[in-house]
Each structure stands twice: as structure tokens, then as C-alpha cells.
Length: 473
Image (tube, rainbow, N blue to C red):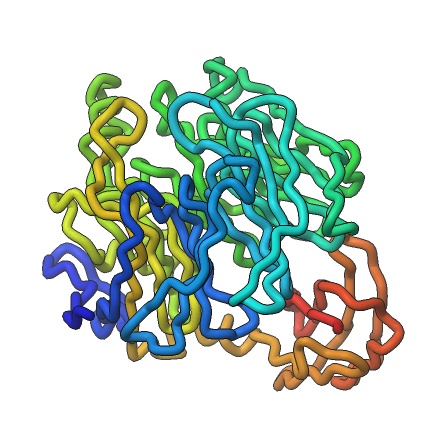
């Protein structure tokens, strides 16, 4: 174990940081090495609050780490890659007692199909692979998102692939959407890669790497249609790398690799605008050759992203600078508070998960080469603890608007503990279909007639609309 603290503060007179930045601290609690042959690309903490961490070990398959002693992480289970058609494991999504694994090559040549596996983790110490689906075309894969009985696979140059997962032991193909590759400018089609997706109702927002951010109409999962798009005009002629998205109300926080993080206003999906930009390399640059050079020289290559909106902070895994903390208490002016990691030590992160007061970073081995603009010589997991005074005044409006739904998961009835009056309560399934609506203003709602599954509950109160996930057992 190692114990030391890094204050996420840049001592400079040029910025007036929010209070949380002044008190913010990251502490390395423990690290667990898996080795370069496995290559721990990212992690996911168990979403049912069990003391386990799931690690995507690319060529090493899927590993389960015991966190019951947080200062002594222990690898307890490994499912080798031959459980997954010998395709690398790159990203993990959890819904209830199931893991959904994105399978396929992320970098370099597209030697693998796009794939997805479903793993039963009712007992995390005895995970069971239920099914593996692979595409006919090689392209690789970056992420999988789940909505009800459908999975949306971000399959790089294979676009977005929709799969039916109603039968967990028999994954079936539904549809595929490959976007136009001549926007924002004509590029090699292999460079326009679907990397991440988030949802709101019948819309999906997709990080499309060289293809910018695309908005899809998913009301008919059998035929996805593009209804909006955005690419930062300041990056015209330069490589774009839209990697990861978090949505909060009418804003998208988008990790755009060496171009930092963009905050996009999506209140009008037909005319998305740039609301804020953490721009560590000060684009645009007058010389296009200098822009290209920034790809390799930047200390920041942002990838996976997590927003803690009540504290006004975004965390991102950031390549050679392992984890960065961005102050977004004013989303129009995001500011770097600081980072964990030394940009010169050849230790580099690719992915991470944030759970309660912990960040679990996946560190990768990367040899020098033309595909990834940083190197890494150590692979495994680092467990970081973050703490802050995090004054509620930073985002007190958002904090007040938070829903407290209990129990959740629920079986027969839910209670919404909300200080403001409820004007309307609606429950939608994950296809966007309205299931239940109540205008009575009551805080107790009977849900026993609804089938088991995951729903979105929407509350309209005093002119605000709040959405939250509801699980019915």
C-alpha cells in the first residue's frame, strides 16, 4: 500500500478557483498490478454496492477484484479471453446482476470484429458467461449501453449496433447505423468511430471521434436516424477525437482527447452550441503543423469522464496525466484544478470508474508507436480517495432539485422525498414510452403493476424537470 496526498491545486495567480478546488484532495489508497500482458484498460465498481471491482484486462479477459479490505485490493477471479471468442475486453457496463462487455480492438489495425458479451454476476465470485455476439465486419468496439431489452454497441467504424438482449443467452441483431463520414470534413471512413453513447428519452448522443458529436433519433430501434450534429469549428482541419460524454440537463460534457473537454448546449438539438471549453492546448493554432504536433506533445489525452454535479467537478482519465479534476461550477468557464500523476513518468491511464468517494483508474502498457501519443510501462488498477469540503452553495440549485426516491430498487410503492411541490410525475420505460402519469401532486406512488426492469422517473416541479433512474424488482 502507498499513502500520499496530492492537492489538486495549481498555485497560480491567474485563476480564482471555486471553494471545492481549494480544499480538494486525492489520496492513493492502494494499487494492484496485473501486468502488461493483461493490460488493465478500465474498471467498473459493482453498482449493487457489493465490495467488488470489475477490470477489463483486454488480452487478459475480465477480472474481479475483492475490495472488502480497501487498502489491500485482491484479484479473486479471472475469466480468460477465450471465454470471449478470443476478442479483447475493453469496456464494462452493469445493469443489475449482469455485466455487458464491449469486445474488440481499440487501437491500430481492425483485426477483431465488434462484439459484446453478457456475464451473470449474481455471485461475483462465480461469474458466468451467458452469450457472446460478434459482427461479421472487423472494426473493434469501445462501449456498450443498455436500455431495457436493447443494447447499443459503440462499434467504432461499424457505427452504432443495436442488439436485442431480452434473452440473455441468445443475443440477436436489430439494426446498425453508420454515420456519413464526409462531415465535418471528408476523412478516411475508418477514422469516424463511435466511441460512447448517452440517452435522453428517444434521443441518443454519440461521441463519434473524427465525426464529431451526433444526435440520433432512437424512437424506432430498428432504424436509427441522425437529427443533429456538432463539431467545434475552431478545430477545422485538425484531428478531432470525441471520446466520451456525460449529460446533465441541457449540457453535454464531452472528452475530446488532446483538445480537452467541451461543454455543449443541447437545448436546441438542431443548433448545438459551444457553452464552455477546457482547452489546455489553446486551440486554434495558426500553424496546422503545430496542431498536429500537439497530438503527440500534449500532457492531456482525455478519455473516460465522470461528473459529480453537486460538487461542480468533472473527473477524466487523461493518458500520461492519469486523472484530472476540472472545476465546472461555472460550466461556461471550466478550469483545471489539478491532476494525479506525473506526465513524465511513462505511467498512463486509459479508463476509470468513480464510485462514492473513490476513483479506480485503469493503467495501460503502451509501447512507443504511431497509434497512441503516449507510452505506458505499468498496467493495473490504482485506487484513489477524493475528499472535499464541497460547499453546497456551489450548486445549491441542483442540489435542491435532486430526487430522493425510496426504496430504489422498489417492488410495490415508491416515495419521493422532495421539498418542492410535485406538479407532475411520469414514468417511462427505456424506449421512451410513457408508462404512468400522475398529476395529483402526491409523493407516494403505487408501482406494483409495473413489470420488473429499469425505468426513468420524471418529476416536474416549480418549472424544473428532473429525471432519475428507477429500478423495479
